Length: 142
Image (cartoon, rainbow, N blue to C red; front, top):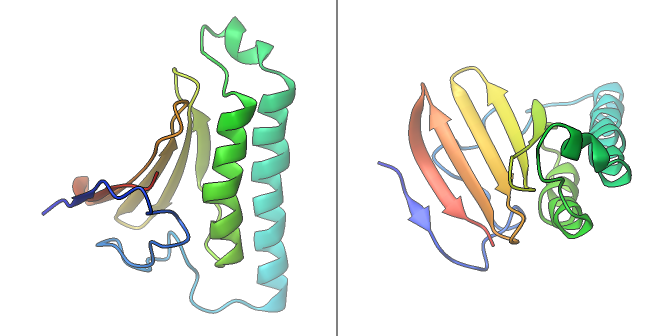
């Protein structure tokens, strides 16, 4: 059954286990030094090739009819999603996409699990987990 928490103290740093658990979508079990370096490179690409690029070129969104993520939204995503997830050794997201309202969505996929972290333009952050296409957990982190 889906759960929902409205606790304002929930963040990526404090959520350790959900019904998605420590799936391979979020945390690899054993990594070699080489794999750890590759993970760091992948996280760097998310930051450099996505978020920094979006901050530097908001006109790309406007041309597509979208509201670009603001610098504040990008900073929230870095502080509350990217930094803690990378520090905890989680796998980088499968996709990072803008939403139509100036937010940022991180998608993580593995086997039958799909996890979504939405950083909204108003500062709210929502985490949802789906297994086999069914919602099993949804939490407000901020």
